[in-house]
Amino acid sequence: MTDAQVNRDQAVAQETAAAGGSVDSTSLWGDAWRELRRNPFFVISALLVVLFIVMAIAPQLFTGTDPRSCDLSRSLERPSGQHWFGFDLQGCDYYARVIYGARASIVIGLAVTFLTAAIALVLGLMAGYYGRLRDALISRFADFVFALPFLLGAIVFLSVIERRAIPQVAGVLIVFSWPVMTRIMRSSVISAKNADYVAAARVLGASDVRIMRKHILPNALAPLMVYATVFVGLVIAAEASLTFLGVGLQLPSISWGLQLSGARGRILTDPHLLFFPGMFVALTVFAFVLMGDALRDALDPKLR
Amino acid sequence: MKGYVLRRLLQFIPVVIGATFIIFALVFAIPGDPIRALAGDRPMSDAVRETLRNQYNLDDPLLIQYGKYMLALVQGDFGTTFTGRPVSDIIAQRAPVSVRLVLTAFVIQAVIGGIAGILSALRRQGFVDSLVQVSTTVLVAIPTLVLAMIGQVVFGLHLGWFPIAGAGEGWYSYILPGAMLASTSMALIARLLRTSLLENLRADYVRTATAKGLSRRRVVVRHALRNSLIPVVTFLGADLGSMLGGTVIIEGIFNLPGLGGEVFRAIGAQEGTVIVGIVTLFVLVFVSLSLIVDILYAYLDPRIRYD
Image (cartoon, each protein chain N blue to C red):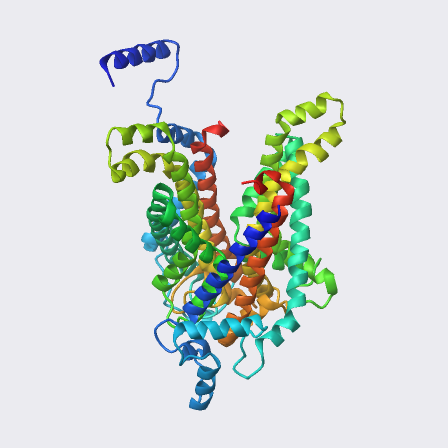
């Protein structure tokens, strides 16, 4: 920026300030952050997300009871003042079980999302920026995988894996979910690629890598970020569903899906077995989906 | 138009081959003994294993295996159970239940989602609009699994409005499971229709139609709504996949004797060949219906045909 421009900008800023306006930096992300702090839905969902992440890292903060020390004589006891969520079939304290269940869901949700987003980032950039053969190869392969509905593909693949713990379930979810994010990334790269500032950078002799990193990536990231936030919720719901169906995590893991599948067939006699893990899954998914919604509203200038 | 349909048909073939190959490779080409994996903890004599290896041509190279598998698939052979019953037999017996469930869900989401979307767009920021906004946010965010189990307890058990499980009462027993299967898509349709209708109501051609003296009803129904349906149709096509996956959960919870319920049962009984056969059918149904939606889409939106 030349000195003249800086001077002019400062003059404009002073005038704006004098007129009572705001003179903060106005990047897309800065704007979005200001917008988000004022959005009550974002604040609520962010607090919930933080709560569940803390619960996953340090469940001891919420309960002093060991979820694996069970007393069969208390099997299926109803919720009471001392034991808020009652007891499960094995006579384990259900509150401790549900609190400890957050870890599997949060770990799978975040791990699958980060890895899928990383794959989508690389493949989307390659397909969108280079086009032609690379685009054709990546897009057609994505089409094949996309033709397999997410849940169905995961059911088939997981049903032939004998030992299933967090890494296996997360891996299978990544295998079937990368095409959607890759398509999102590819299309935002394509729309950023044709901008004048990219042509300007190229004329100035910038390398492909530099153009992608400095010019395209920052401008193409917003849609991926929005989808990734919602996606954490979708993955957590998918994990709970797969585990419920019997192709996800296995005992002795502690997970909400396993608790829900234990509740199936007992809803007549012991509705508390369904209610508490169900509420926790729903709240976690709700928090991430709501946060994604708020993020989209903040990042999309057309909606202002 | 003819060119477009032809192009879509040509793209359809590699997608079918690619998708079935991925299923096939995931099941039969993973390290270890696929027969062992398909059978789970079931004890198995060498003779049975030998027969199964023969049946799935596991001693051939992978591509030949796949070729033979595809050839059988084209002839309607979806494999056999461990007791020797053809999976296609089970499919023929169970499919009507799943078709009824999906149809019920489809009608519920189209009618309720559609009406909610139209009303909230026409009375923007009114009471109905806020109600739709809040309820769709909640519906989208609650996983089908949890919603279905809670719906079963509340509407089936406590209120007693619908049967709790089974398909014994004809179409009536499909309403609750259908509504639960439709819940997420219903909310998404309402939102999508609201957004696109609001956008179209501001369009120039709507102002023109109003200016030339057409009634409000005619302007909305004939002009704005028709164009607003385009994104909804696209959504319905993509949504079919998650709906088919959802039938496994819903039929499992509500104990409906359909294809999804059969997959649910087969997971519990560790009958891998049944799972693979039915999921393959689901994938074929999904790609075929997506093709139909794509062609329908071209009829609705002339812009698609000419690129």
